[in-house]
Image 1 (cartoon, rainbow, N blue to C red):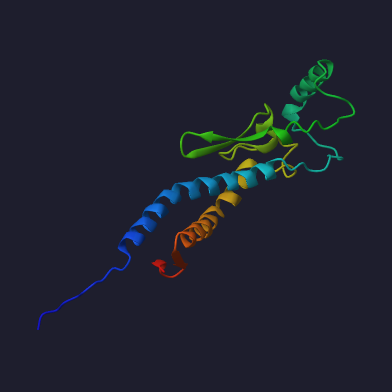
Image 2 (image 1 turned 90 degrees about the vertical axis):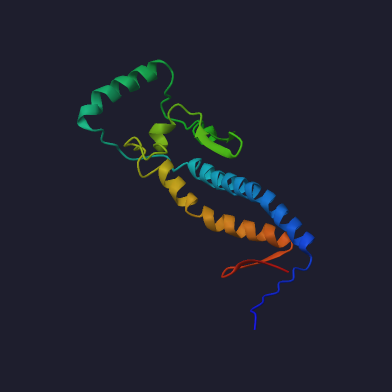
Length: 174
């Protein structure tokens, strides 16, 4: 007795169209989720802590350089006493397109590296440490949530195209 398997595909054109539509949506879903994640990071970076009311002890080898810089900036009008926050750092964060598929989050503030540290984990200036959000920490925290957010968003788009989603088996056609 021969072994035989018969497969019948119903609505093959509809299934093919749904898969093609789904294929076109994948990059859009990814771009949108990455953009939304960068918006969350941007909001975190713009959070301003309360005004520092304590004393800060500068490292001994740095005191003269810092004092000289402060005096020069004071005479140049760059520093106001008493200090008033300008909120320039808060408003300096931007998100722009990067190439065809990417996004770029950056600050136009020339002193952002001292307040936030760097994306590769460079340290913050000691006076800002543990008060202002560290850039690398914010990135790592939010990027960790990205796969789950993309999965949810992708499932929503797939359902809109006539697919159903199950966590154990993936997609199936209604």
